[in-house]
Image 1 (cartoon, helix red, strand yellow):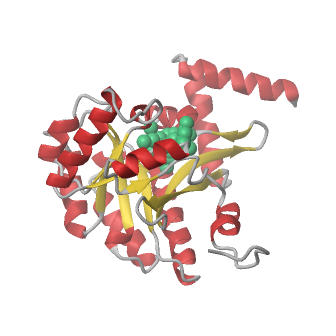
Image 2 (cartoon, rainbow, N blue to C red):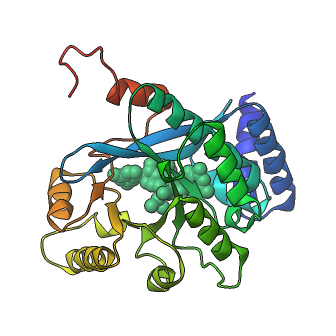
Length: 282
Ligand code: C2E
Ligand code: CA
Ligand code: CA
Ligand code: CA
């Protein structure tokens, strides 16, 4: 079994390097993962900077592999895109995030949920119908859902993706540009996409100080965003100092290990919605 497991790991590594045989293997493993419910969503809280109140959760997918343990999305999402499995994975993510939000809603917690979409998913002609169906199935409003698209992908202005984003917007779904500031497309995206939220990439936060390039960039993004009536979320906030700085710079929502790590639904409920606490909940 150990041998098989290390062989499989080698296959994933080979798949990364472009081996066709390894791709096939990964494809069948991912099919298996989907069919046998090996994918799980973990959740990370997003807090309003001014009040500390939780306003949203981001759903982040993991693969609970029977022999390798928890595999992160950076390992299998790019491969899923390559082997054409991002469609079904994305559909699963959307459904389970909506189901989870519905459960938390029913328990009295008012939140929105953010889901990451890959560029390929946005090429799907039926994506708006799929999203509408998921919302309807779980009795959610369109503005309960935030779709995050990463800025590092260049969306061809001629592609279906742009149309789909407009359709989603018309449905009432909110659109966030993820990793804002890292791609080539930042400003052009603002011009062409119906954006509601900018998520400032954590690379601008890591070494953030009151003065310096990062501070100028964060202040600049906030000012631009607010002029355009967009909300600003800062990701990767790990320290109190960073948190205070980005709040003072006008960021609306903060997310990061300081505010909360990514947790399984059960652990998340225990950490944030548990009534049975000796200290009493806040
Ligand atoms: P992302 O959307 O930028 O998600 C943020 C990543 O940063 C997450 O990693 C999160 O766990 C991590 N993170 C959060 N707070 C902190 C912090 O304070 N410090 C540091 N150093 N890291 C922090 P994760 O879960 O491994 O996800 C990696 C990427 O995989 C995501 O980046 C997203 O682009 C992609 N991804 C995740 N779930 C999905 C999904 O369902 N569909 C698609 N298409 N992509 C997904
Ligand atoms: Ca994201
Ligand atoms: Ca991000
Ligand atoms: Ca990222």
